[in-house]
Structures are given as structure tokens and as C-alpha cells.
Image (cartoon, rainbow over all chains, first blue to last red; front, side, top):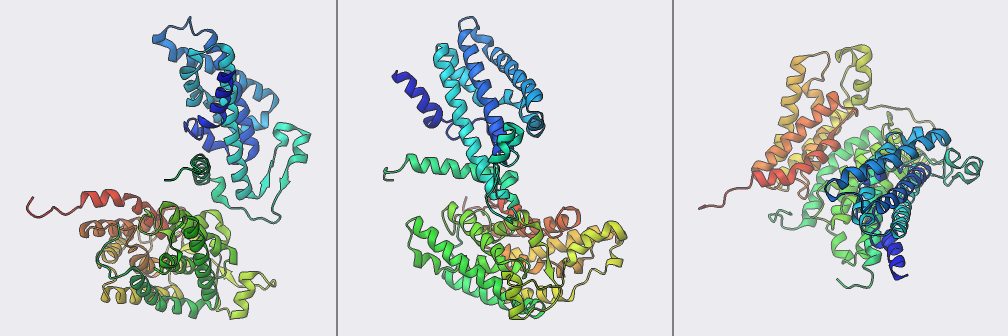
Length: 213
Length: 315
């Protein structure tokens, strides 16, 4: 049991792929200009992580060591294709907004990293949990950054979430500041870098609390 | 990073603030009380934000705040933005400059970028509308208060700057001469900053290298462009007397923390900024490019310093 709580803690906090490993930053920085995009990409990434971790773990004895990376990429790419087709048929508008970043999930180092570092050495149950927790940890950072940038950048939260959640999204969408003129920088790439830097700094500050320098 | 030749930081900062007076008076003469309101708002915001952040970092607030660097950054930013910008623009800009431009790097002396210009670029990118609306008339104190704090809906005759007009008018008219690229107010303000800058040189607060090479960069590159096509590019004297050229040459590029520190390096640093300003004005998306040029060349300062390090005697 101890193993499992450790996996959960690692995925969500101690080895958070976005905040500690700093992997997968390209989609993280590029699509987090609002919450909906962040949730969409977070869900897609989490699904691919879980599926690729399970399949890599199941075939870990059959995959020969020399060519394991191409095979991992092949497995990951298959799941990304599935996600892409699913999004195209069910969330077409969101798919258009996320654009190239859905197929680019293949190149997300966090996914290949977990396949190599965890799934190729552990049972499929543990790998599934690891994939889920890493994905959720990654998604939480995506959503936090998306919320921060959307709030500062345009003064709204869950704007356009009807794209993902249908009618529920329309009720979720709130305008926090009325007559807010927007701070464009937060929505542009610099806002992503500054925002991520602040989140990483806050995490480190929290981890280092009580430790005297 | 701080050059050790200055007797004290606060003395130096005070001299720079005195030297700004002429240019600020010229701006007041043409634009009215908005200029002083922006400076007041900026200075108050700078002192509050800097004190709060110093306290948060556990530093001695009084000794750090009295070096005057935060106040100087605030004044530089306040005179760079339109004097009818809403009150929150300068406050947000100064806060960004102090927090992200200075304190997060570890305070004065550790910042790689000029804080005032970082604040300016932040404002320019974030609030393009407020940052490009300049008024045309002199505003009395009550008018300026009305506009800046949005008390009543008075109309101020506003327009774009000359550099803006040139940038946007050129594709239509096809010739610089038809646009009349002269502006009396900007020429006087630039002259004010030029005189203030000469005072700083006289008091040996700044070195001649940066302003001289900066202006040489502007002159040489603008002349080359102008000779290549007199219809498309601004004449050199307009480059010198429009926008923030003099303010940039004597007050902004000379920031001792973020500028190059070797004599040869200062010449390269200033020259590159001057050239880049002309390039941005001629080909860039924004009408003026002082802030972008200064920040971009700030980035190259570690390299410039490394390449121009004087040889130790005897080696």
C-alpha cells in the first residue's frame, strides 16, 4: 500500500512533471491562455499517459531494450491519434483551438519520460496509477496557470467552456471583473513564462518552509 | 556589477532627477499638469511597492528606499507614458517594473534589465490603446485630474505622436515629406533632456561613452537609410528630435546597473542601441523602439563585458 501512496504523492507533488521535472513545457506554456484550453489539453494528456503507461508496462518483457524508445513513441502516437480523432468528432471547436498541440502530445517528454522511467519497470497496475497521477498533477498546473492567465488577461473564468462541457459550461462561465480592459501580456507567451515561474517559486517556497537557510 | 566610482548611489540618483527637470518642464509647458500627476502617482507607487517588497524579503527598508533608484525608475516611466493615461496605468507599470524588473532579481545591482523600460514594455504590450493616446493641448490641473481619474466625461483632444503618424501615414502617402515629420513640442522636450544630459556629463554622473555612441548609432544608421531612399525614411534630425531619443541616450541607456561596464563595452552597447532604435522605427511594428532596443541590448551586456574586458597590466 505504501508504494501506491508514494506514487500518488510523487505524481501530484514531489515529482510533478510540470513543476519539478519541468517536462512538457511547450504545450503547457502555449495553450494555457484560458481554463478551457487547459482542461482540454490536460484531459487529453492524462488519457494518453494512462494508456501508454499501461501498454508499455504490459509489453515491457517483450520489448527489446535496444529499440524500446521507437516502440514507446509508436505506442504513444497510437493513443494520441485516438485522442485526436475523438476530439475531432466530439469537441470539434476545442480541437480547432488546441490545433497542433493535440498531435504534439506525442512529443511531450513527460509521457515518454514516465514510460521509460516507470512503466518499463513496474506492473501495469502501478503504471496505470502512476500515469493517472502524473497526468492529474500536470493538469492541475495547466489549469492553475490557465486560470491565472485568464483572470489577469481578460478578467473572466471558464470563458467558452461550453466548447467542452456543453450547456453546463454556459452556467460556469463567469466575468469576474466588469468593464475590465484586459492585460494582454498575461495572455501572450511572456505571461505564460512569468506565470509558470511564479507557480514554481511558490511551490519551492512552500517546500522550503521552516528550513532555515 | 555596480561601478565603484560613484561616491554614493543616492547622490547619483538625485543628480539624475535634477537633470530631468528641464525636459519635464518642457513636457509640462506643452502637455500641462498631467505630467506632474503621472510622476506623483508613479513615485508614490514606487515607494509603497518597493517598501512592501523589501519588508517581505526581510531587508532594511529605509536604507534601500533612500538610494532613490525606485523613485528614479518611477519618474522615467512616468515621463515615457502619455500624460493622460488613466491613473492605474502608471501604478501597474511601476509595480511591474519594481517587482519583476528589480526585486525578484535580488534588488538594485542585480537586475539585468532596465526596470523602467521593462515596465514600459509591459504597459505597451498590455494596454496598447491607453499607451498610444497622447493629448494635443495643455491641460490645467482640474482637467488633468478629470481625465486621469475619469471623474467626468470631458473630451480631450487626443492624437497620435509624430512617429505614430509617420508609421501609419507612410503607406498611404508614400512620401515622408508630405507627412511633415516635425513636432515643436517633441523637439523642445528632447532639447530639455539633451541639456539635462550635458549637465550629468559635466557633473561626471554618467560617462560620455554611452550617450555619444548611442547618438552616433542613431545618426549613422538613419543617414544610411535616408540616403538610400529619402521618401521612405525619416531624415536624421527628425530621428534625433522625435520620440524619446535624448531621454534614452542620456537617462535610460546610461543606467549603471544594466549597462555595460567596460569603456569599450559602453561604446559597443550604446552604438547597438542607437542602431536598433532606427531599425525598429523604420521596420518594426511599433512607432518608437527605445524600450525594446534597450532591453534587447541589456541581454547582450554579459557577453559584451566578457569580450571587452581590459587586459590586466603585465599579462
